[in-house]
Image (cartoon, rainbow, N blue to C red):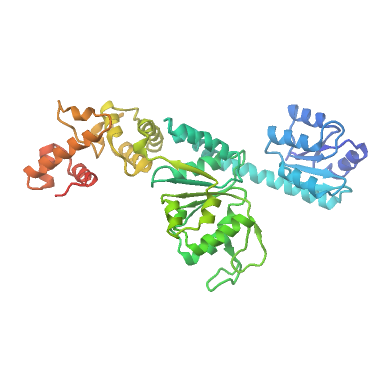
Length: 450
């Protein structure tokens, strides 16, 4: 097996010789005496770890660190300093250094630091391999191409580059709040880290704290003997997505506010604080401003979470995106189900634009999945759509751009058929030449009483 390459960057020749004598045999050692030499090295070669002196004669070590992190973000860099200056060390860590060593360097500490850097590098590479399909899947373009989508994409790009900023995503159910959260996360850099979801409405108030903060062994009756990491800790280095945060209890809201203010938390039954090191993205389909005014949601927490607010518009207000999204889902399910759908007929496109999509993007996605799975052929036709009912020729209401007159015409046709069949759905479906399940679907959506 090839030995890992370590690049040592230092202007002290005796130090370079000492590093070579100490490390050779276990590692392949390359040396550079200036920042320029170090940067030139990466134009023709590769290293698994860089040991970088902060004080170089030509370019500062911190500037070299920035250049390496920009061009080769996957390579771990360990900073070397002659003086243990907290300010310098902290600033280097913030710039992306994985660790630091203080001269004179203890050999055992040197080997341990390199070993940890290599292990972190291997782990990061493994995570990138796993996450690559997700990174390719959750692109900014997934949000749509309508005029409504473009401002959202612009803000999302900025948020992806600023992981410390809390984000609140609002919108109706199925409008794409989870998609937006994942797009921000998976576009946050070369290694976005874990994406951890907690559905605030699916966990009881009694269990919420132990799920969020974790717990120590014996913290409460029934607790695991080994304790358990909380989701805040599981999301370390990545994103915690708090879905449906509007239903969180006031007690837990208070605890979460403390975490956001102090940037640390305590596991249930624990006495040692754990640093908060993840991005917080929240989502809700509720109006939190009303919840605040009614005393159901803490005002201070609302302002903490609402640093940047993204509103996902309902699909009925994004008519330009409907067919575009339908075609995107069609291509996706073609691959999944090995089908060959290539087009959506003009009549089907028209019906899709007129429909009000109460279930938003989720309803559209589920519909296209069913069509591609169940139907045969190479095109989606209007009669594949459960909400489509043909309007008689010559009825100009079908051309109404708002779709309102179309719905009124469809309602009138269904009510007339039901009246003529004394409310018998099966008889009315035969009269309309429409499958009974489609008629029942439309009766329910239009709120027609039988």
